[in-house]
Length: 29
Image (tube, rainbow, N blue to C red; front, side, top):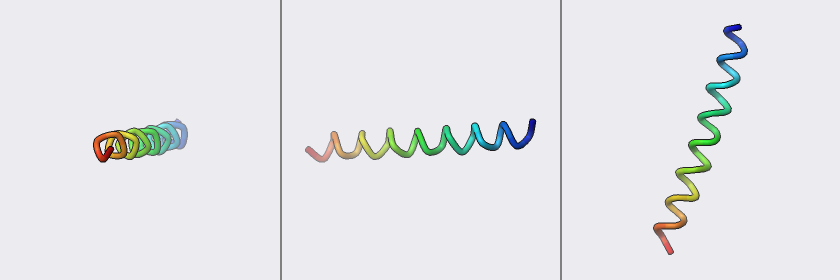
């Protein structure tokens, strides 16, 4: 259970990192 939530947290962090990167790219243009 703990490992599952850890994987979910890692996946969420990766998604938010990509979202932030795309947002900053959008603002740069």
